[in-house]
Length: 539
Image (cartoon, rainbow, N blue to C red; front, side, top):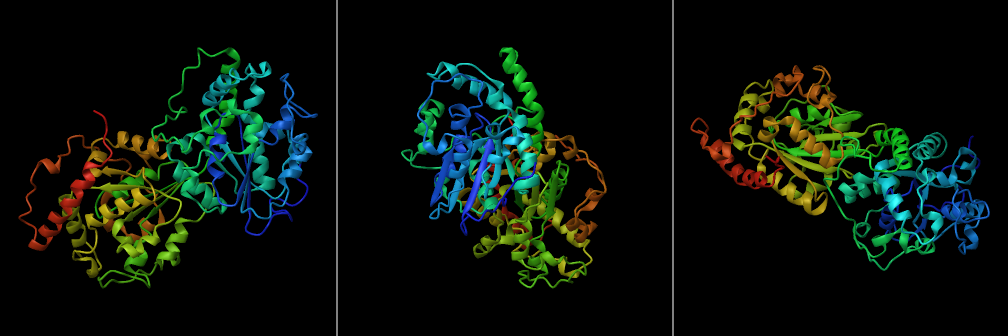
């Protein structure tokens, strides 16, 4: 059934006004998400307007027998709710509604979906939604709610509405998983705002608890519990992925078990389509960053970038290097300026679950160039003992064909840049950014990658450790094989659980020149600071 009227832009939508309806199910943290968006400047939010006619209106579709409540006149029927959504709201920059997919299901009821809106979806593992819904239902004063009904948490309704939305309403609609929101609310909300053209504010995650949505009060406090008095989002960066670690449901009622199992079919489909994870990993020369990127290339539905900022740094019209280099004939057009690289990173990449880029910290220094950092990304850092990075760099530079790369330049690859960028990131962009030491990575690559994936909301897969040897991205091929050694032909990571701890030893630097020794010693000061803050595995 095709929709009538203009979608998603209707004549009633005001210029520069963003309208979004977020569809989900009970207990998907949808009220929390709405609570965040309530703090957008010049905004109006609606809390389940369609739930009122569904449960209490003259067209009520629920199977429950409920005690009647006084309904606002504009919420007694589905048609009136649609009209309310389609009002002009001339003075508002954002109009946001949170709704449940089953309110407008099955498909013949899609006619009530308001015109002029973007769409988004919020999901949560069915075990969490089902058990949470059962718990809150038992607390309700109305005995009609004191039982679990599967009709209130049908993920099939979300899946069907999602497919319909992509075809007829909003081809760019995104799905957010509640666990990703809890792991890192700021990054999820920043990405959401960027996608839908909303200006992100710090008040989205820290708010005045006295500011409430009047629709929430119509339903009653018992549905929202401590959210009504909260003033921030409770973050848990280590929340479990229940698809990887399935919960025990044997003690639940048969009806709840059946609901979880049937909903898991559609949850998995939606989970695979959910909002992207976008990560920039910063480091310096020879930190095994290309090996780490090679692992990320094994993630499903991923796209990776290998130092696109290197093009404008060394070869572009804004080149900052002091080297005299030969400009490659195949220099990509979208790499000629830092602004073009930023736009490349910020492109939508539809159909991709992971967007991963590896970059060098010195590409965005001095400080006035921090503005080149792409928006909407999580961040991570990769370090390695400076003695190892310098030894490896001297070796690889001796094999370069371009004479401009035969010497070390002191402004490149410094650990001071990594330290300063790390401080900037955790203070201004991503407080949950982590540091990985290459030696820890080599000691146990699987454990490090699993921890990394869990932290950033990714699914670890075996193809991150074992890959096809000729599957590379275009930037690697552009740089040439001399920079990457035998990585171009490998199909796995060379694990070394006995790799030496260089900080507990004093490496012999007698073969280094005085200038090189000075660089290593200075870099060690910042490496030690970063090393203390690195991700560590529990023994």
